[in-house]
Amino acid sequence: MQQERSPFQQLADLLAGKAPGLSALDLTLGEPKHAMPSFIQAVIDEHAADFRRYPPIRGTEDFRNAVAHWIAQRYQTGPLISAEKHILPLNGTREGLFHAAIGARDWAKNKPAKDMSNPAILLPNPFYHAYAAGAHAMGAEAVYLNGTKDSNHLPDLTALAKQTELLDRTIAFYYASPANPQGTAADLADWQQLIALARKHHFMIFADECYSEIYRERPPTGILEACKGDLSNIVTFHSLSKRSNLAGLRCGFAAGDEAFLTQWTKYRNMAAPQVPLPLLAAAAAAYRDEAHVEENRRLYNEKYDQASQILSTDFTYQRPEGGFFLWLDIRQFGSDIAVTEKLWKEVGVKVIPGSFLARKNAQGINPGEHFIRLALVAPLQETSTALTRLKDCLIENKTLESEE
Ligand SMILES: Cc1ncc(COP(=O)(O)O)c(C=O)c1O
Image (cartoon, rainbow, N blue to C red; front, side, top):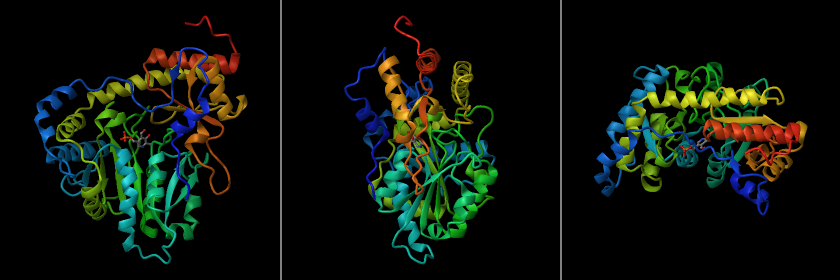
């Protein structure tokens, strides 16, 4: 089992000692830079006295009610989600996704498995590193599933269905939609296929939907729309970090399978970080407001329009259905690592090589190696300067000293 290294650490090592060619423009971190909702500060101030108190691991009724209402509205699920039974706050989804692997191990003790000496956790490839860290921490084999064009760059579930030995020892599957970094989203049929596999082979689905509200034309279908009123084997993860530009608030939620959540809560009550009460109040207020989310989407979509104008004639480039990344095919210019170094050294644009976000799968293929990831999180002007520099550097090899 291999210890994971963060892609950001790998990038720091790659660029160590190398100066940027122009003033640095950082497109690496998926940290939103749009304004946070204007009402957040006032809610925190109003509840500030509660910083004195230890927060309950299940959060407050107010928070759970706000989330249950939001889910019902967003996914048209009616009374499927009960605020009492099916919702847990998370101190950011990163910790939740990580700790979920430990929950899966405890839950899998009920699995009617033939041989559980080598449990597996399935991951998309590329993947968010908390998934791999979770698999590593609980001693499971992390199995990296590359997407294909036919599977819309999401894990190929039809190919997976044939791997029954693997599925029988699988305890959990982290499945991200919209995916980071590709921005592709599962449709109803994908979710239904995934749920059928999970129920047949008795594993948990951890659906990472933290980019669900950052979409282009239409809202991505969620797993809760595909579950036909039955939450078993399903936990979905949502976050305010991207939806509401509140990455520092550290608040999201897990919703789904009551039996899993009840058991996981016992573990979380001993080991997981709670969300402070004033921050739960602010998070509830954020879930009750959609106006700031609509404005957020508008700002991102404006940047995608600009990106198309700058890049689409020269690059193989797909406008992603969701999320705020560009997953740019750069194979015509060299390896992802060579291109990353060139962009930094010549024009000060910092990007992440795709191969740092993925792993070689069992067939030895790293699906990220022909790509770089660009986060379009900065304001329009800064993003557009960075993309123009990138294009000029790679396509036209212009001298850019006089640009600014
Ligand atoms: C795919 C994915 N999942 C989960 C997270 C975690 O977000 P947070 O812990 O801020 O909720 C991120 C953050 O970048 C992400 O990209």
